[in-house]
Length: 271
Image 1 (cartoon, rainbow, N blue to C red):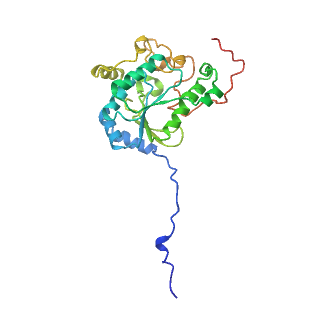
Image 2: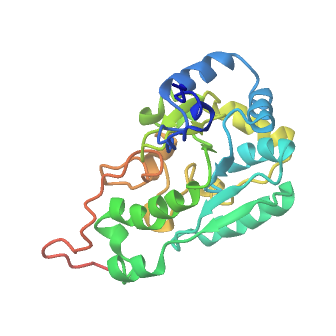
Image 3: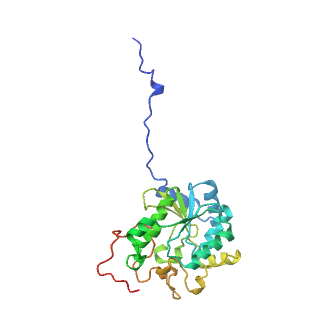
């Protein structure tokens, strides 16, 4: 009797499996924080971008008060790196002009302007006043959802967040995991430990243009309806969503809004 059990051994079909594991884990973030502890910001960014340690990356920039510093650092390494800008339809005109100035000045060729979905706007913010009664919902529509769609093609993002900006950002690490959607994207904060003095010195040393609203008392700049001037001694971000229990737009924390699309009972806008 001939034993044929081994005749198909080399042709057995392998089971196809879809890898659903996250791109990166908290352990990866810890490893990268340890690897680059004490290293120069420029050197760290150069290694991460050029060596692909974080996969396909995009810069997420508001083109706000200190955005020029991060964008200048990135432009030195790869001016074609994608730069994602959320055009919410509520920005100061000065911000849009500043964006165009920086893009030209720094030679950034990867700018991608993200806009809210027109159908979602029509259904949930047709009058454009949602910011006045539901700022979380407004940010969800105009920032969180458009960015989530754009980030689907990337493994990580580079942000301009700084630890000194507010108490909620104190202790911000250089590398962390974005847990918003379970995809395990890496979030890189190159300026996490920078001080205001360091930022100011970089502006001066490299003759970078300032956002025109900074000189008018706006050290942190978001959408016009939700950005106020800041008094001396206050957190730089204290002018954002003044009067609301809100410190972030939602692109850096999981969404929390009650997205039912309805006005609150008795709502009557006073403007």
